[in-house]
Length: 91
Image (cartoon, rainbow, N blue to C red; front, side, top):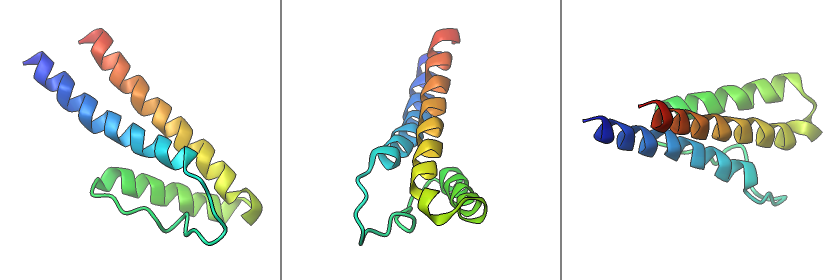
């Protein structure tokens, strides 16, 4: 039973981490709608990303939006992979 639980956590949380790392390293083009391309079925990830984008646009100047979003996405991805690693280590 523990192995099934670990596999489910790995797929769900690891998938969210992989999606975040994809956005952290996604190439940016001038015509690309970088901030509007967030169409996921995972509601928690979408809400978190929308909140980060809103916070990013309200607090920081426009020239830093993409750079700071990439930093946020990278740290979120690392956090998700750390959760997966800790689950495999302690369970």
